[in-house]
Length: 223
Image 1 (cartoon, rainbow, N blue to C red):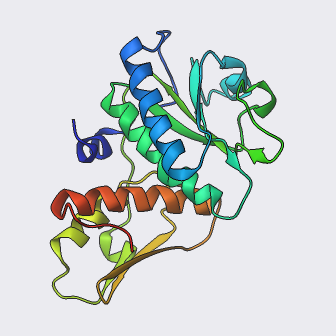
Image 2: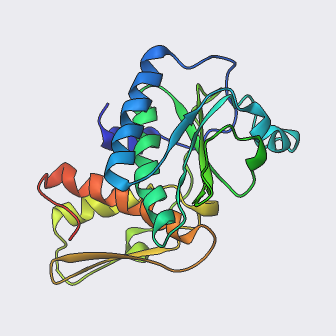
């Protein structure tokens, strides 16, 4: 499975089987986390056996059987949440490739019960619940590319269309897809249209667009 296949197959999963992560899955996650931390100057951590962080959500029927998660820890500074979205989504997709399921969780988990190392100048605005899903989740209705994109070329380049289609499948807060992708004078710009978790969503969408564009034009990169 490549990253484009992972984008197509991954859906949010909130109910998990009582099954520990395999040694192979843990090793794969730790490798990807180390890469993201090195590239992004972050302190993401794989947190094992943290069910109490999700216990309140379980009582509302929102999550069931969550044992492990990725804590998205970083220094409190401008741009942190967008970096969390950009690098965190790569981890979510790599988890899918490793046979795991996942779900982004912001605001509602019990931070005081999260067994992550968080320094005095750091924060953890969200986590990624991971594990072996009781199901594979389900797809949601998405906005059309016409509503999500603007392009000053006609026809639009194949790499732009591929990137936009990958971004169309990006998970966003409440599935609202509050973003706009624009191609203007050969440069791609993705902007937020407001709403909750705006910066995190923006980072996730940028990661998806990049993966899609590079599936057609491997040399493509953000300017």
